[in-house]
Amino acid sequence: MPAGRLIAMAIGLVVLAACDTATPPAQVTQVPAVNTRVVVPTPVVVATPAPPTLVPTPLPPTAVPPTPVPPTAVPPTPRPTVVPTEPATPTAVATPDPDRVQQQQYCDTAAPPAHVALPPLVPIIQITPPGSPSQAIAATGGPHQVGTDPAPHVTAPHVAVLDEASGALLDAVDPFAREAPASITKIATTIVAIEHQPDIKHVYTTTVSSSALVACDGSSVMGLEPDDHVTLETLLYGMMLPSGNDAAEQVAYSLAGSRETYVAWMNEEVASLHLQDTHFVTPSGMDADNHYSSAYDMALLARYAMRNPEFRTLAASKSFVGDDYYMHNLNPMLYSYAGADGVKIGYTDIAGRTIVASATRDGHRVYVSLMGSKNLQGDCTALFDWVWHSFQW
Image (spheres, one colour):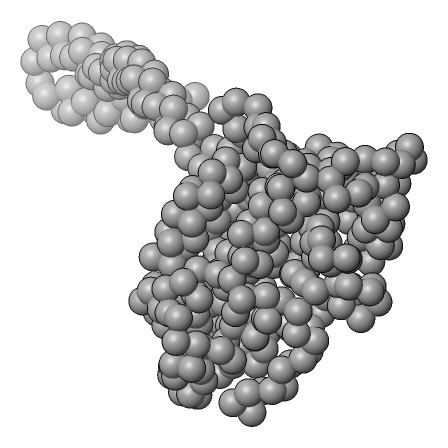
């Protein structure tokens, strides 16, 4: 039985006892009071269930979370813009590797205040094509061909064989192609120096470091180091015999104050000679964009330079000693071919082997100009022999 009902019955018994002690029988009317007291617990039961109806009302806040969801769509938009820049930076940084950076430091100190450029990383340079096809300069007189043998096949893809007296083109294979000339550039460097400073005994203080230049681009050098004192004559022999790039850089700075000014002098010289397929960028002949010449132009340039007696002496000399520098000529034709008396050889990875060779027989001089040869001595010998056999003056 529920505790509430036991309590009510107990109270009822107590009341009944009290009524029995009371004298009037009217007290029997108190019995309904027992019933009214039994009703008292009912309010407690009714009031408690009401609060649970309030629990559903806080549920609407669950509709709030969808509102922060749209901001999550905003971050993806900046991410695509950042991702493309990430892979771009490694490719840019990878180009100047540590060895290349150190190499540039050597180039910067090789010929102060000029900064020698690093050699190209790839075996190609940019060369501006000619505006119109080149043609040989009209020649009058010259030898006439008496033999019927064709010109020999040689390894060089660019050939020009020129008669000294008339300028006649005796043989040609793609002679007007613009190519990297390498150190036959020094034909121009040397003749320009002689024309701007006729006193070849003039003494200059050196600023070029041959050791730094070798580390910069692998140059051939005569061995200059800063703060030495050498004559222009020694520098000219240093250019023409061992093909010293340090001598070419020193001549440019000593005579013109900068390599840019000196190279401008060289380009003025070739313009005056109407060499339309020649343009210089370096005084030494190291490869650079738009540093080019042709086999035909270099033959004409050598022909012009060899008319200067000082230049002829330089070009024909097998060795020279001056200012404590000993040098020997790298032109193999001077040691192997009868009558050879010049002019200059060259080599770079891009240009290959180049030469303008000069030989004289019976008072007649002929120039053989080759670019890209794989056998300078063999090619020149074959062409000279063919000329003496096939032409008469």
